[in-house]
Image 1 (cartoon, rainbow, N blue to C red):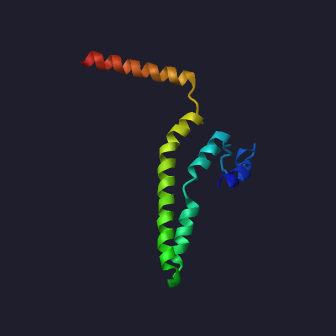
Image 2 (cartoon, helix red, strand yellow):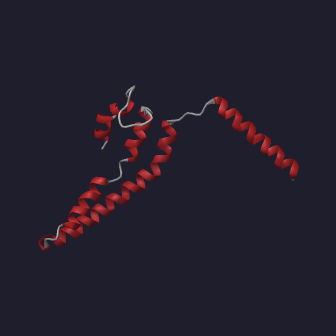
Image 3 (cartoon, rainbow, N blue to C red):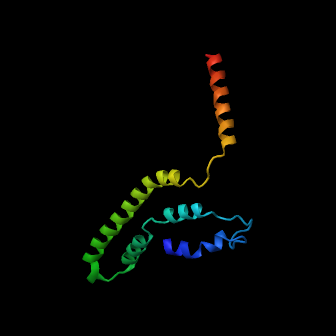
Length: 120
């Protein structure tokens, strides 16, 4: 998955990117977030679905054991990636906040706090 995103990232980061109607260019940080979000055990899930579709009775014991492992892989990757995406996103910081926007937000919060203090 990471290799495919790495190979085709040039399609999305060029000056005239393909596959976009408004010519929005993805940054490398956005591509890294897409790559990290794609690590969800899709291969294990596809393997499990393939085993479920196979109806050969000779493999019934192996099928049950393989489905147990595939379910474990899917649950673990969802849990680990689900808990790790927020710290990873904060560390990567793909959309840094402008200092002027931060000042405006702090002014709004301060005026709201002053208004609430006057009302109580």
